[in-house]
Image (spheres, rainbow, N blue to C red):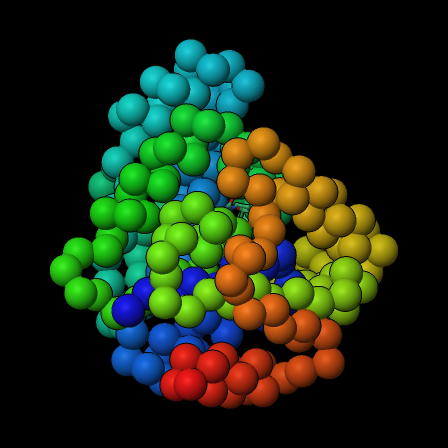
Length: 222
Ligand code: DC
């Protein structure tokens, strides 16, 4: 059984998807982290992502593998564990930019589909899981929330995790960055961020993580 959870950032998508998978005993896949791993590789190898030839060459040589270590997925790029490098601001920005490029999407789409072997039970979290990658998924969820609510969640997260970094950020700047990323994710030509016509929409603006998880579990059971 495949469950897809899509939506923009700051909707609680990752935490919710992880909890839903945990409760059901399903495998959880964070597909945004795959785009982030490729973006990290592009930065680490000092590749100009706008140079199509160089980017394609990099993609051909980039081997991305996922390994479960102590219950957590680790992302390996050409044999190196890059998991700890995926949440920086430059990687966040570049992952959104490169996700508009066909060759990047083709490579990761293939990898995502290859993760489904036999009758696996999994929760796939991303932007185009329900629309493009798994159009036949049994249950599709699309999470939304007001932009300001999402920005506040992201900003509070940053203050809690990295207070020194948060000093150079404001709620307004976070909101602007979120809106720019939404704009790019929603308006790209290939696999734009949107709800599948058969997805259940949940607005998480005034819901707690546990309330969203409960709604999804109820939907799946029904
Ligand atoms: O979910 P995230 O913030 O980790 O995703 C990082 C970027 O990757 C996001 O800006 C858009 C892109 N992405 C995508 O295009 N398709 C997916 N299935 C997942 C992420």
